[in-house]
Image 1 (cartoon, rainbow, N blue to C red):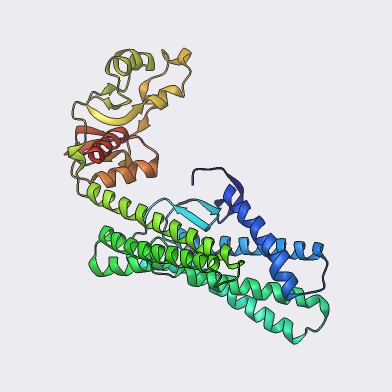
Image 2 (image 1 turned 180 degrees about the vertical axis):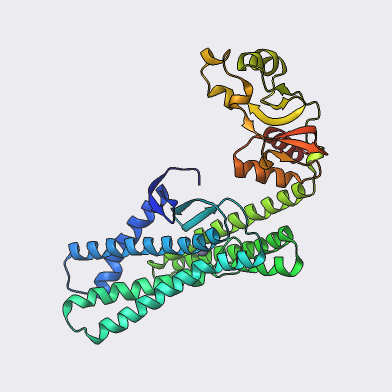
Length: 384
Ligand SMILES: [Zn+2]
C-alpha cells in the first residue's frame, strides 16, 4: 500500500497509521448501520441518533481491528522483532514486522495472538450484553445492548475469518509454523501455506461472483449485491497477497542458496584513516566512482566511509576533517564472511540501514557487497 496514509498516534511504541482507503470503509460502515441495520433493529429513534450510533459503532470496529494487530505486535516484540508501523486499510490491519519469526513456535504464537484478542473482545462483549440484559427494559440501554452485541459478533467473525488456513492470513501463518516445524524448511513451508491462501482466495472469488450472479438472475434480494462484490474483492486481495508471498518465498529461497562470494566486488580500494575528507573526495570518491570505501589504520580495518557520511559535513570543512572522525567505526554488523548467504547480508543491511558490507576472511578484506549489486543481480536473474 504505497498510497497516502496518516499517523494517528502510537501504541506499544509503534506508529499507528490510517490508509486513505480506510476512510471509505468507515463511511460505508457508518452509512449502512445508520440507514439499514440500526433503524431495523431499534425502530423509533431520530436519524441523528442513528448516525451517531453508526459512527460510534464504526469507531469501535476500528479499535477492534487495531487491538487485533496490537495482539500480534505484543507477542512479536516479546521475540524482539521490531515493528515499523501498524497500518489500517480497506481490508483491516497489518503490523509491518521488520523480520520473520525466529522459530516455528514464535510464528505460531504471534499468529494466534491476533485472533485470541478478537475472541477475548467478543467474549467480553457477550458478558456485558448478558449483564445489561439483566438490568434492561429501560429504553436507554437498548442501544448499548445492540452495539455490544454487534461489536461482539464482528470480533468473533474477525477472529474466525483470520483463522482461515491460507497464508498470509493468521490461520495460514499457523499452518506455515506447523509445516516449518515438521519439514524444517521455512521457505518450502511458506510456499505451501501460500497455495492455501490462493485456494481460499479463488474460492472466495467464486462465491462472491456466484452471489452477484444469483442477485442478477433474481434469486436473491438486490441488497445482497454489495456483499457479493465485497466477498469477490476479499477473494481477489487474498489471492494476490498469497501469490506475492509465494513469489517472495521462491526468491528468498534462491538468495539463501547463493553465497556473498558470488556477488561481491573483489577489487577493493581502501582509504587510510588519517586522510582528510578533501583528499578522500579528490583521490578516491571521484576517480573511482564508488559509493564507499573501507578505512584502514596501518593495514588494520577500522571502519567504512560512504558518500552519506561525507555529505553530512559542510564542504568548507573537508580540508580540516579526517576520515576517521566521520567514518562508521567497524562493528560486527558491518562485516560478513564470503560464505554467508546473500539473504543474510540483505537482512544485516536492512536491520542496520547500511547499503554495503565489508567481506572478510581470516582477518583480511576480500571484497565488498553492496545493495545495488544485489539489486542488479536480481534484475538480471528476472530477465533470464
Ligand atoms: Zn491477524
